[in-house]
Length: 474
Image: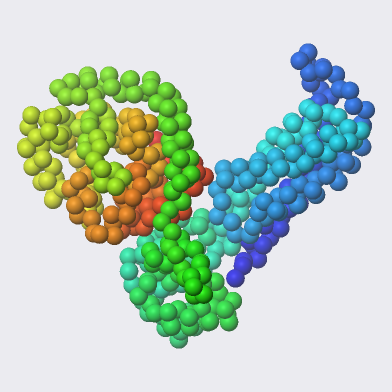
């Protein structure tokens, strides 16, 4: 089921894009006329086309760009894209259109000969269209949050923690466009029908895998009859990547592990080496200042703390972090009071850990220094891990590097996390940081393993940077 408001905003994008493209063309034409008057760098124009003729031509060419935008899926209705992702798609689609224009002008120079207008129009058109789309999204979001226009009335079905997390997320983030009308524990069609009659239902999400296939099939039939969108959260096996094959005349499904095999591994390693080298150089002044502050506050121990972690295929390695604890509390064999530090940590885990499962998180950890509390809060303590990435012990993106005692608590299926290199950041970290339950973190990491791409790595890096900036603002 599609909301009329969604269709309205999506259709509105087409004329708005058209206007922005024509406006961009006019802007660069006027700019080309004015620049020679204020700068000697730009030579006087040599083309003879008048503004009126150029404007008429832009009215004809602009629809061609709209076709390219449509091919590049910029008019997909109910798209969850973020503003920067959409801007990137606009840039890519506009670039494709400009390439065609450049080829056409090269083949027929009599049409138009100003390279400045073509190249400047490339970037101005991208900026205008992206800005207009951003403003449209802001207006649409205002009506969604303030007026409830376009919000989907959703019914959640299930009894597990996923249902509660979804309900909490939809309530906390109205910009997602969901209004939970009810939560059901069982898949009762009679109850669903009563809710639809009383409150209305636009979408049903089944969050519990214990509901049988027969029950889900009945719900699906009901949704199709009453024009209701139906979704369900699959099991880990159902989300695996697979390939259909025919073996000896019989259809067969082969489950694939990860694209990080063969050339995928090579490409990821190149990305890690280049990115980590750039970040090491970029953040070297910050690391130097942090090192000095650590030494001033607690000079009894090392500046960089080395902690043993389990990496790819269960291989041990030392992860580097700026020391944010007082040296006497650091759990490392280099600490003369190692046994005391280990005992104190176990005590804190029992008394203050806010996580369940193999991993722990100590709330209000008293072992931190003042400098340590600050750098740990903003993940500055992890900057030395770029060296781990450069050395090949870690990747820029991947599952968390876990300690040996944490890995020993893994169930057998959890060991799938050890099939690739651990990461400095990852899909689980940007989806909830350390607040996620371990099983949810595991599922996100498995999704990453099964669906890896270099674009996914870049996306996660951008999301990590944005989350760090958001924490600084808070």
